[in-house]
Image (cartoon, rainbow, N blue to C red; front, side):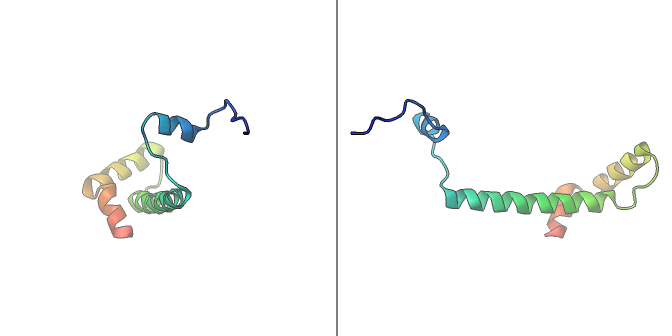
Length: 80
C-alpha cells in the first residue's frame, strides 16, 4: 500500500474545516462571472469619468457629481 504524503493540500484543509471545495467546472463559471463583473465595472467607471479633464481635484469632483447623479450599480446595469 503506498504511503500517503504528510503534506496536505488546501482542499484537504478546507474539507477538514467542513467546507466544500469548488470543482473545476464551477471554478471556471466563477472565473467567467468575475471577468464579466470586472468588465461591467470598468464600463461604469469609464462612463462616470467621461468628460473629467484638468487637475486631479477637478476630475474627482466630476466623478463625485456623476456618481451622485447615477451610482455605479445603475451605470453597470445600463452597460450590461
